Image (tube, rainbow, N blue to C red; front, side, top):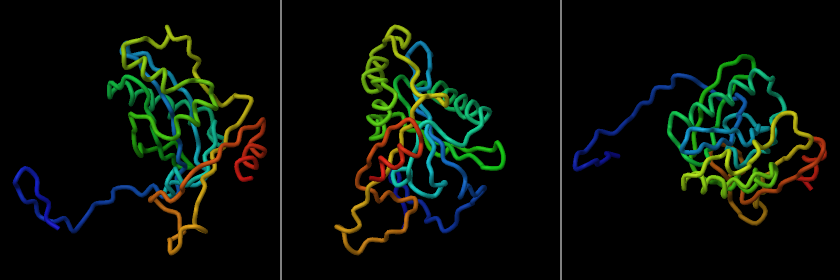
Length: 204
């Protein structure tokens, strides 16, 4: 279809250019926060069990990440902090990355300078009241004056696993194949001292 923009009609687009395929790469997320003075912290990082191509809302997600080496963790953490700084965001921000499994190549999938349904999950896991801190940052307070910690890191002594909930048995005639379109209708959080126990809690 033709697209109308400011009274002008644009020609329909029949082709796209795919420069790089990232299907099958790891999907990693970082929750970061920044105040108006430019101070930025990492609240938490998460790793999707499913690779890029499955909507993060439909994937099992574990915090902190389980398969990143320290170089990969620090590389993506630095990228997330650079992004929130460059965009001048005051408050919280979610940065999603695709990481090639056999190299240090990565791509930015999306950046969300807003609260999502992941925020309560991360707040509960880290003990950092993210909505409260983000609001106070937007009103001009500095992070260091709020007495906040920096959240959950790879050396944390507990694991959190978010498991999606699907209603395919109740909703009929649905395509159950997972992909980029979100199909879950809820989520369950499992927290434990080991990844296996946290996952089992989420599944049961």
